[in-house]
Image (tube, rainbow, N blue to C red; front, side, top):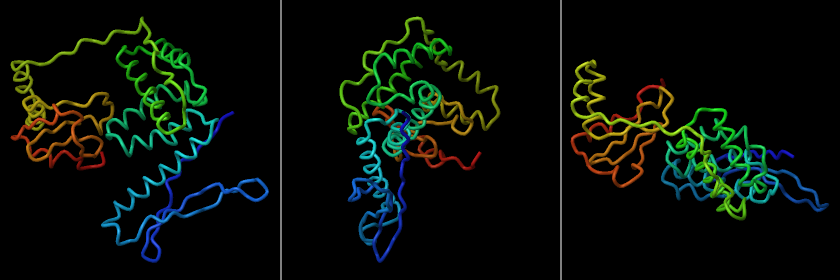
Length: 277
C-alpha cells in the first residue's frame, strides 16, 4: 500500500505584536475518529526577532519537527514519502547547497524509480544490492559513481535512524559494489607548460578565468552538468573564506580548502551569479 506524505511548510503570519505559524494537525475526536484541523504555534514576540530571516529560521525549525513527528508515527511510510517529505528538505536546510543538490539529483536519477515504493522500515540489504546491480547493468557507470549512489542511500537511512523513522542496522551497510562495473578513468593534472600553452590560445576574458583557476589552486565542483552551475569555485582568501555554489556562499568543506590565498580576495565579491541565465 502506498503512503503519501505532504511536507508542510506552514503559513507564517504576524498578529498583535507576535509571530505565529499555522499548519494542519490531525486531532482525535471523542468518538475515536480523527479530523484534520488548522492550528497555530506561537513563535515569539515581534520584538524578539531582529529581522524576518530570524522569524523564517524559527518557522523552518518548528515545521521540521512537525513533519518528522508525523513520519516517525507512520510505520507504513514509503521511501519516497520519507525522502521527499523529510530528508531532502533537511539537506536543504542543514547541508551545503552543492551537497543538497547532488543528493537530490542522485535520488531522482537513480533511486526513486527503483526503490521509492518500498516501505522504509521493510527495506533490506538485498534491495540495495539488487538496485546497484540493475543500475550497473543498465548504465555504463564507474565504480566511484555507484559508490556515491550507495553512500547517498546509506545517508538516508542514517538520517531515518536519527529521526526515529527507522530502527535497526543500516540496511545499506555491507552492500557490495558490482565487481564487473567499469573502473574509473585516470585523471590528468596540467603542468605549468601545458597551462601556458592553453592560455596562449584563449581570448582575454576566458584566459583570465582559466588563469585564476590554474594559478590560485581553485577546484571546479564535481558532478556539474548544468550551464548555470558549471562554474563553481572554492575561493580561499585572507578576508573571505568561502565556497560559492548554487548562489550560496559557505565555508569550504575542509580545513585544507580554507588555506589563505590573499591575491585573489577580490574575487569573493564577484562569485555570485549576476543574471538568471
